[in-house]
Length: 111
Image (cartoon, rainbow, N blue to C red):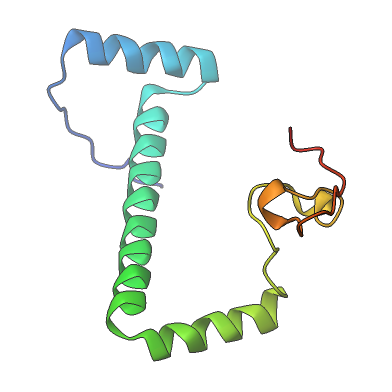
């Protein structure tokens, strides 16, 4: 015989309860599932914030290790695109004004 998980109550405002109920109705799920999902998302957000902070600290405090990380990352993922301003499939097809040589009109589609 399966045991029912223990439950408790928490105090929330009526407005918050109504918002959870509306989300649950829209998703076709129980309110507890909506709360569980919100908690998982918040935990994930905090985990990735922690990773970003660690990466920033490594970059700032140990540039040699950071350079090694970037080199290894490039081996795994391939070289980084020249520009992050456009989608990779457009790389090389658009010449931005700051990338043009003097006197070279290029294909200026960025205007």
